Length: 293
Image: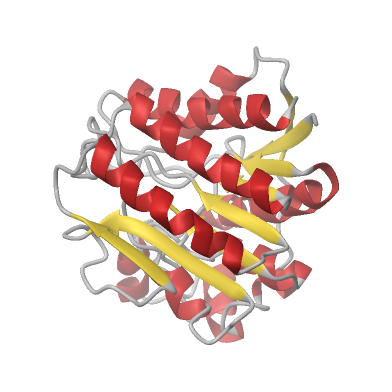
């Protein structure tokens, strides 16, 4: 079924010169997908603070929105505070929440942003301020599973849902990569530096039946492409074809379960940036073909 994807790049985020966060990829991805008549693209709505407070400590939410976070907290997040950062953050959470509502109606949807899986209850980390996946799950209140195939462990995800039997957390990530102090997901797969397609796909495929055993009412796919061999931060060695096979594993799992799927962008830091954009685009184009435009 034809669906809507939500984008955030018009909410510009000014960063200092030389900042290593690949902010340009968001607009480049939207432009890459625009010519395809496979889905509708819509500007993300801003999340309401009340929805954010379902997940995060109210005092932390207030400090961020008002710009009173101390320097140490901002360093942990990795972005300088600005009113533009607030708008972009609210748009990122709003995109995932809007995609979730669309997926419940149409079977699948996604955000061309989001996947902020390093955000914890009362602090942000690793370019993640608020946890968009958790906000969406808490807002809809349905049994869920998170399939996190970003190269970095979803440590915030694991911590936020550690005592929630309604949410299954699965993270496949680099053993020696950030975060260096790991949390405990319901299912964790760790990979050594240099791991390639065959080992990665075999081990991830073996976990998919456990996702179905949870009987989720909705699936969330953190589809980071920083496992790509060109990625400057990932340290794994997956090819573009390997990423395509990975995506198919997730899409087939959603189809077998007969449940809606929400895709979030996650990380990607390849040089050149076009490799990241192509890998992200491949995920959404494959989803459109898999679920029907």
